[in-house]
Amino acid sequence: MIKFMAAPLQGYTDAAWREAHSSVYGGVDVYFTPFARVERGEVRRRDLREAALSTSYNLVPQIIFRDMMEFDMLVDALSTQGHRRIDLNLGCPFPPQVHHGRGTGALVNRRLMEQVRDRVAQLSDIDFSLKMRLGVERPDEWKEVADVLADMRLTHVAVHPRTARQQYGGELHTEVFAQVVAALPHPVVFNGDIASPADVEHVAAMAGVEGVMAGRGLLARPSLAAEWRSGQEWSRDERLGRLLLLHKAVLEARAERISGGDKQLLSAMQPFWHYLEPEIGHRTAKAIRKATSMAKYNAAVGEIS
Image (cartoon, rainbow, N blue to C red; front, side, top):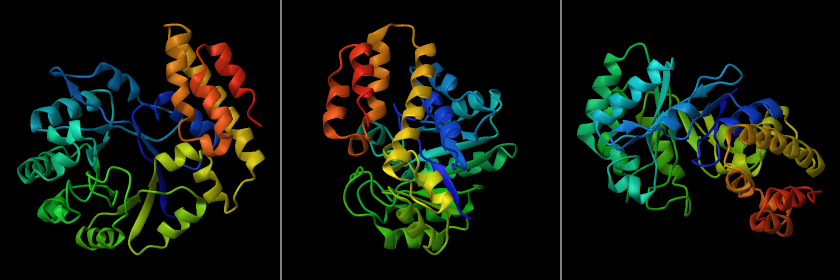
């Protein structure tokens, strides 16, 4: 059976969410951390805290970089933590990152990709994978580095078949995705617009696909992987019951970590529901967004039924 991978999303899939999700639902083969990065000349400490090794679920940290100095700093910091698998972010579409040569901006930098290929060959004690888009402006830009990617030692390549300019909208270039599968010798994972068990099945049937990766779809339907593995869609009552268990576990974990009072905890918890409005209803989602205290927040959550 193909692998099901949980894509990272900044501000959503933190350690608290990953730990709770793996416990409440299961079904995910591997979780990736939101990307670790270099800021003001050093690896962000909170990124390293978020990437702490877990004994309860399968975790791979992801890094984003614009040059070999950043690459080496990040790999060294994570390997010192004990990580032996690292994912390379070559697909972040956000303009501030792309314009500085990171994410998809790094993918289209052939010289940098050649340097990464050579360094990965040297670091034989670490397994690398990567997540990519098709290009910054055009869906054929990946072809300019296809030979370099093909020579890179990778456990898999996850492909979101859009350009950075498309962000998360517009058509998925599935015909170009098929070209990527044909061009690379690595196992290829499909990422993008996977929102239901039927979507997973559709992707699994695509030629050459060895895995699926869901991010926004998994946040909107946390039971997605579990439903797909069971071969049966859950009722809304089943989904809501498990969703409230997930929320309870995430709230408890974040409350232990956050010491700044209601305001900070509230700002940490409100995004939990961002992708769940279709599940809980507009009225409840609006009450959660407008809550100005944890008491009001808890009251709004308590109305979910």
